Length: 330
Image 1 (cartoon, rainbow, N blue to C red):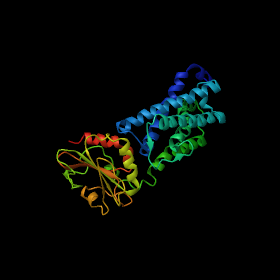
Image 2 (image 1 turned 60 degrees about the vertical axis):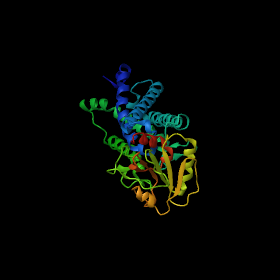
Image 3 (image 1 turned 180 degrees about the vertical axis):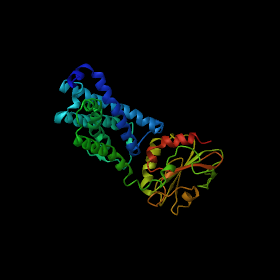
Image 4 (image 1 turned 135 degrees about the vertical axis):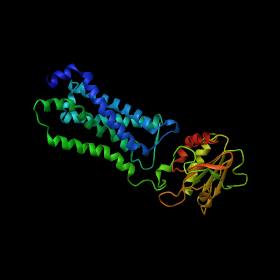
């Protein structure tokens, strides 16, 4: 049976052959770049989030497949794509990926970016999600041709070694790029041991310990408390976030310890200077990768014991996550 006969007879087979590798490759890409996103705390498991995202990515690849079907009038157009076929894959991937990312960031506001995410000027969207479908689609469509290639090999045809080398080089670039960006030059304010950064459960460092005195009546018996640790360049952003969402943390005591001269104040918030870092040491805050003062927060339970400490350079964008951890604290 020729490829042309198969193309006319089995479009569903073609779509399935495309969808499966699209899901697998995009899942790997999503996992590799997830550390560059600031997600809502109600996102759930990162594995589940990446799976949902990759399902959406696979649907977008199917849209590229459908576009090629309309252009080339064949469901298996990708088996011999030529320059026009690759143009459909790459340009279609750029347009669809860019449009979905722009809507998600600027209209739906589903996520934001960590400082390490390269951003495309003008569009103000991440470079990696923009390139994702454009780089992965040619590899996806090549993998989708493997069954037909295997049939031809079984019939006595030979496999083109140059094609194999080219496609594996493309795979290495496509999957290695997000890994390189995510791992290269990690943020200087991160915890040297990322296992302890935003672990999401109480007492990650061991048994609870008595919280040091922050100010008169802080921490107060019977009340939960959160102490934010910031550097002078972060305190204005933290104050602005607390002003915009004054009740997001609920009825808890709030303090902000600034590693230097503090110039901010906010109603209901204890704002203090921790120039020598004694308070940060008293809360057992880890030192970040750059060796400077910590940026993150500590949570105190109603009995006055520290139950959660973490470095978090993006904490002003993650107050909902702080609220979640406070809700889990007795």
